[in-house]
Length: 137
Image 1 (cartoon, rainbow, N blue to C red):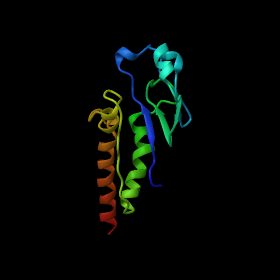
Image 2: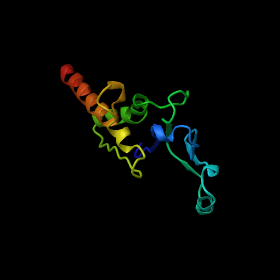
Image 3: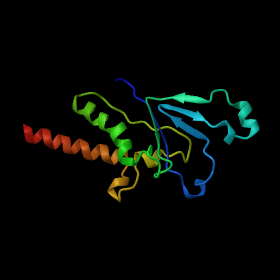
């Protein structure tokens, strides 16, 4: 693996709950829901779907496909720790408009522990694994 791209729909904030969604995930593809756009934006829409290595939906915790902070880390972060320990360079890069969930995904909240983001979990696991390797000699 050289580059692996994941996309995450962040948890909704209170004011967004109950509003129509403008994106829909099907497998590893994210589709723009054209019905959620006004007519002017529909005219500007050139591509209605985008493919990723993994697409994660964190919008509704009651849905079976919901991706929690922990599951997001299992999908994206765990592989990074293993690659680092094998001597490969790794990079975690988040990109998106203001308010799209980059900080939520990367940092999360320190407490409760289950809400920690990718970075805190990565650092924890690197030190745990380094300790294991040190103990093993």
